[in-house]
Image (cartoon, rainbow, N blue to C red; front, side):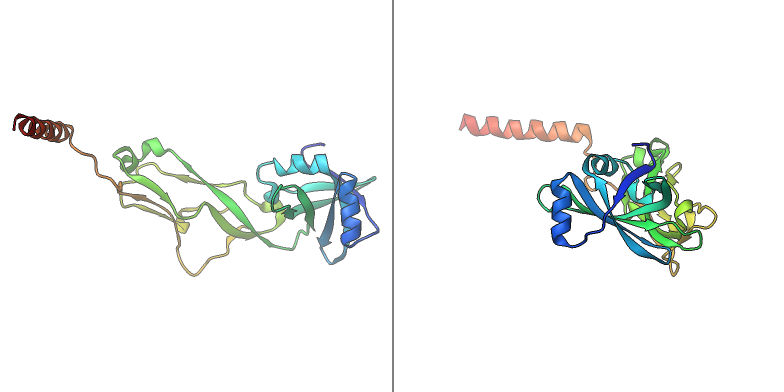
Length: 213
């Protein structure tokens, strides 16, 4: 399987019985929908589907869906897994449309922790949002948002307004400058080493006094 090509077969039969029969043959039933075209039932080879599920950013990646000598661009939108075995049961693909915007979750990557004075002094990076929801066309989906922690002190916050949005990409939350992360004070304050030693010695002295009685 080429990295961004998924080979599928068209299927004429639909329904639970047909889906079970396909799975017995090592195929995963699915459907391609969208772009003002009727849904098309398909099957994907199980081994190919397993490889897809291991691919980072699966639901944010455009693929070429190949059926015979025909290709179309699609975006994976949903994979149903067995609740116990996690075996894929069904997959949905959305046809690419140049004028249709969709909502997607973009991961947030934090960089330069070592350059944050607050974190270096014992502060903790409290991540409020690991992903950010945006609105864009499928060919404009960002790989990730990078947040630079350089210079952040304890008590500082990172808000949505700090994000660099590519052209054509919009935040779905526009009514507030929401928080992405904060640098929080440590929950356990460091104990002075000398005080800790004195405390231990005092406890040992008390124990010795008790033994003399």
